[in-house]
Image 1 (cartoon, rainbow, N blue to C red):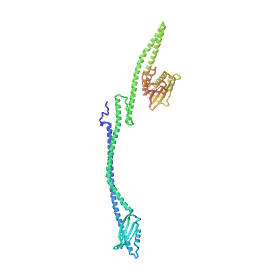
Image 2: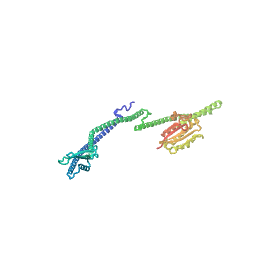
Image 3: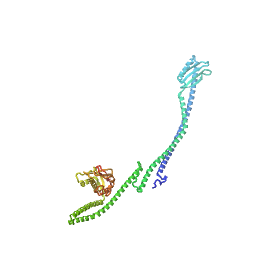
Image 4: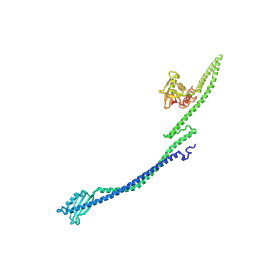
Amino acid sequence: MTSPRASLPWWGRLESRVVAALVLIGTLCVGSSAYLVQLTVAYFDARWAGALDRALVGTDDAGHFHGELVAAKIAEYEARTRASALELALGDRAPSPEPDRARLATLLAREPDLVGLSLVRPGGEAAEVDRADAYPEDRFEWFDVTAPLGPGAGAQLRAVYRIDPAIDAKLQAIGTTRREIGRQQRDKHEIEAAVIRVIGIASAVVLVVALLVGLLLARTITRKLGRLSGVMSRVAHGELAARADLGGNDEVATLGAAFNRMLDELAAAQARVAYLQRIGAWQEMARRIAHEIKNPLTPIQLAVQQLRDKDPGLSPEFSRTLRSAVEIVEDEIEGLRRMVTSFSQFAKVPEVRLARTDVGKVLEEFERAYGHLTERAEDQLAVALPDEPLAIEGDRQLLKQVLVNLVENAVLSAREAGRDPVRVAVSTERSATSVALHVDDNGPGVPVELRERVFEPYQTTRAQGTGLGLAIVKKIVLDHGGEVSVQASPLGGARFTVRLPLSR
C-alpha cells in the first residue's frame, strides 16, 4: 500500500511548508532587525560624530584660551618685575637706603607667588632671597623674569615666579581630552565595522536556528500526522483494531486520542450491534425450536399415558417395564417443557421502554418481590440500597429481571459448587457519568478465558444451566445503552457488573 506522504511532491508536504514559513519569518525578522539596527547606528553615528567634532572644537578653543592665559600671565610677571625693579631704583635714591637684601626680603614677603629675588649690581655685588623650600621645583613650575633697575643703571633684578599647578593640570587635561577625541574618531569606523560584523553573524545564526527548529518542529508534527494518516488508512481498509499511539500533550496527540476514542466507541457499537444481531437470530431460532418441540410434547405424553392405562396386567414384569418407560418419557417431556419455557422466555424478551427511573427504587422493589430466591434460612442475600438518588433512563421491570437472572445464576452456581451457606450481595457504585450494579457471590467464579463467552447464548458454566439467562441480561443491558462484565468477586466467586449511564 502506497503511503499518502510518499505520493506528495516535496513542495506540497506540510513539513516543507512549515520549514519554509519559519525560514521566511526568520528572514523577515532578521532583515527588519538589521534595518532598524542600521538606522539606529546611522542616527547615533551622526550624533556621535557631531559630538566628537564639537568636543574637538571645544578643546581647540580651550587650548587657545589657555595659551592666551599663559601669555597674559607672563606679561603680568614681566610688569610686576619691572615695577619691583623701579621700586628698588627709587629706594636707591633715598637719603639712607636700606640694604639690598632687606628690601628684597620685603618684596618677597609681599608677593606670595614669588619663589626668589636676586639683585646684581654692576660692580659684581649681589643680593639674593628665596623660599625655594616652600615651592620645590619638582612639584611646581618656575618662570624667570629679568628687568633692569632703570635706564643706564646697569643693575638687574631677577624674579622667579611659581606657576599655578592648576593651569598646567588644565593644559594637560585638555591635551588628554584632545588625544582621546582623536582616538575615538579613529575607532568609530572600527566600531561600525564590528557592529555590522556582529549583526551579520547573529543573522546567520538566527537563520540557521530557525531552519533547524523548523525542521525539528515540522518533523515532529508531520511524523505524528503521518502515523495518524497511516492508522486512518489501515482503518479504511478494514483493520478496525489499529490505534494511533502519538504521545505528547499537543493538539495532534489530542486529535489522535480523540480518533482512538472514536474507534473504541465504533468498535463497541459494532460489537453491540453484532451481539444484538446474533441474539436476534438466536431468538428467532429459539422461537421456532420452542414451537416445533412444544407441539408434539402433549400428544407424546398422552400416548404414553394411554399405553400405561391400557396395560392389561397379564405380565407383572411387562407392567413394571412399561411403568418405568412411561416415567422416563414423562421426566424427559418435563425437561423438554422446561427447555421450551426457557426458549420461549428468551425469544419473547420484551422491548425496552425507557423512562426516568431511580436505581434505589428498582433495588427496593427487587428485594421486596424476589427475596424468595434464598428460601433457605442459612443463605444470605444482602441488598445495599444507595445513599442518594441515582436517576437513569431505564425500564424498571426489565432491570428487575436482570437482577433476578443474575442473583438466580449466582445462587444456583454456588449451590452446585457445594457452598453452604450461599452468600449473594447486591450493591451500587456511582461514577461521574454512570452507575454500576454489582452482584457478588461466593460460588466457583468464572474462568478468565470464559468471561467474554459466558454472555453468548447457550454458553454456561453450570451443569444444569441452559446458557440463556446471561444472554437475556446482556441484551437488556445493551438496550439500555449500558454494558455488563464479569470479574472476580471479593466474596470469592464471581462479580457481575451492570454499568448504566446516569440520566442528564
